[in-house]
Image (tube, rainbow, N blue to C red):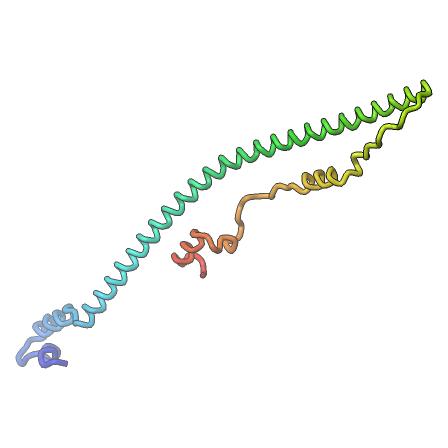
Length: 180
């Protein structure tokens, strides 16, 4: 304690009670160097926190905007994909129907050929055999491919752990909204 601080604490001789009270109030109200340093440090910490919040807010705003833009673009592309899949499915159905019609036509022609050869007792070589469609491996594979195509139940992420590695997850961790 300095001599000035000691004098302020002890007071001067002949000082009245009210004078002493006023002097002590002034001492209490005057911040010490330590108190000023604590206040300044607290202000600096508060300024740093404000700046961190502002940076985080800018990053958050940018990420939310980027997500909205990407979402819109992907939604448009999804609609195009749906149309493409529908067109491909229709092409598959049409190709299948054409194949089946040709196969049935081959059967009809074979029957007609056999009837003519038998009916007129014509010496002719039999027509080459055509494999039954159900026994063709490539057709079984095509049916398997289309049968295994599925649609997910939802596109909603239900667990924040699924977001690990995304910018949004990093922002949530940085803001201490979720544990790291």
